Length: 615
Image: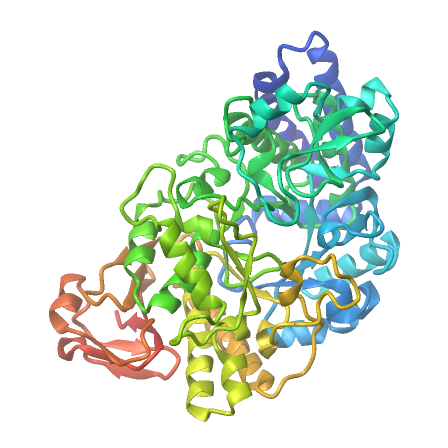
């Protein structure tokens, strides 16, 4: 009975929101009212088909557990199923491993069925209603989600909704000339139209897949392909596309998926004469998806993968007042890139200025904070299309590429450049966390001092993302210090450079040390209510260009985070500390050491500190 009452309340709350938002996008369609009725019929059917245990989870999260994804006990882990544990059943067997690390959120990469052959690491989806056959069956996935939930781990998968594989049924029918499905994509018979669009578009993969369009001989037309030629962009101007993708999301939500990573979010809407990124209708679409899921499955969380400039990323969480909510979570790619920038330069000026410039997040939203993922480090996040003072130049980006490729005499890193060309400003770097942070080079040389410094760098980076605000994410293998896989294309020469940092999970010499440090950090984080995402993160000037600093402050107290990005000891003077009302004693939480801030603080090389004020 409670569930029926809650569903009725949700319908009252969201019916008008859904209708108004979709009318803004599709209201010009002659059959809009009929189409809208079909959307609500889809939602009603999905609620009717939702398993009882998920309806119960909806009720809990809608009433007494609304902040579940904001709490400090949240820790995410991202993995390729086959490289982590073989298949879905193998993942189930590794749940104790994840729990020992403190994981409460598991992102399963490439879970849905991709096209055979080259498939962009599983992101060219051939069937949204089937899983990757290497991992098992849909029943196996459902079984895994049940076991994960029983262990308080929220399952996440990728929702690839900007494009499908060219092998998808819709694409095959479109190529064969079926009008209904041709309108699911962007087909152009006139090359001049293609060139007009292309003139304003950046290239995501200029070296391995240049351009944004592919000529399809069978269709005698060009089709929009932002990423690889076998990934055809969906046409959201067609309301049938929105309806089909809603249907898919509802289906997967009813299989126990709690978090959807919305892939390539910024690219959804296309308009001639623009760069087709971050457009208003893209945000309208996200508002519509969010409202539909809030009605049908409020236990579900949407996570934006919007790898765009710093000034745009928070917009994917909705408007500042929270009146038009979009995703509950968004990847903080700007923080990720800035951390690597600061590690290379030893200075935090750009990172601090950039993060200060960002608006405060809307209510009940937060970040995914991370150091590495299955994609490259995208240096474009450090640029700005409106010329902000903190923005990096192309020369700065090239220097970062050179540093992380190990081309500089003072570099500790062992990475590779990705999609860098002389005619495009897109820069990226591939490599695992341990290899980029210097552990690979130090271990190869057998230099104990360098090994210690590399481990300090890793620890420093994690102390920042575990305390900055949001859900920290561990990419598979980071907890064991995995190095680059230089044989990544031995069996498949056409694999792109991102496979360098996609090695299979394996034991390592220093793995236990890193794992233990992260597990302890997760335990400490879990106990700190000041690390709840609702507690604002305020970037402050440390008075030292090498030390990143921020404060988390609420009625529960004050937490000061200090991070020295220099290989040399760095002092913070008492005058600076006094400016921020921090003159009273603080306790460093990792060492339980008291600091009299009236005497100043000396940070060791690459030291991170969590200092809690004693109220």
